Image 1 (cartoon, rainbow, N blue to C red):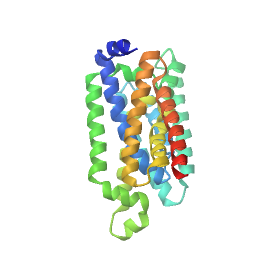
Image 2: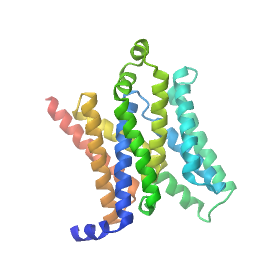
Image 3: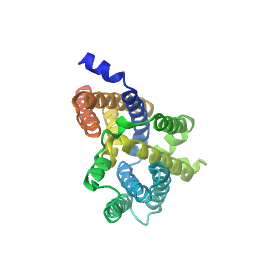
Image 4: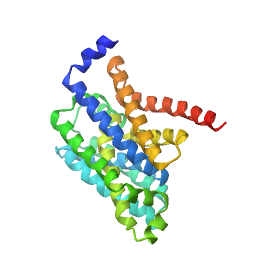
Amino acid sequence: MIQTLTYYLSFDFIQYALIAGLLISLCASLLGVTLVLKRYSMIGDGLSHVAFGAMSIAAVCSLAPMAVTLPVTIIAAVILLGMSTSGKIKGDAAIAMISVGALAFGYLLMNVFTVSSNISGDVCTTLFGSTSILTLTQNDILLCTVLAAVVILVFVIFYHKIFAVTFDESFANATGTNTKVYNNLIAVVTAVVIVLAMNLVGALLVSALIIFPALTAMRVFKSFKRVIVGAALISVCCTLIGLLTAILYGTPVGSTIVIADIVVFAIFSVIGKVAKK
């Protein structure tokens, strides 16, 4: 097994997949803690479906997927957050409405304007992930690295503001913090992470990549900083295990990573219960 793994790791495309996967999982874990605590866990699900619809538009119009998907998903994230906080439409209803609408619109486009002889295969690949993470180029890695660096820098620079908005938005607003600006910042970062993560686990499994590491860390750690660090380490380890397993045994990349997250979550849940006794 070690010899086989060493052989695979000598290929550039495997190295690119590992770099992209670890960067994406790190960003997703940082974001996940904030979204879980703000009770926006399922926003990733809604935005991933929006990204699916945007990718369908890009495919039909023969445009670069990232050039369409990223701005559309960012706009949808800001609108979705605005709908959730305005009180006119509750958060879960807004997410469900946009999620189902975008998914239906994207699938309709791909069927009406046929761009491939294997529509079912293309849709399944987009929704559940595929080996596309193993076909990344140097330019893809560069773009992924830049976007991941931006996400990490945002969390480092605005850590205290994000902490304040996450735990007590009303108090933060009363102390002079422009909570709307930081909520929109979180929405933009969420959109960027969703678009990046779709290449790794697919549209339907993105939420797992965001939610599981945060919930797993919360089983054992209690402070905000420890949860963030713990979630980051857990996410990176699970992604590494999932990617290596998928490479060695030919299993679906996205599903394997999510299964690794589930197993680790179960282990940490047991550890957390034992520690309380």
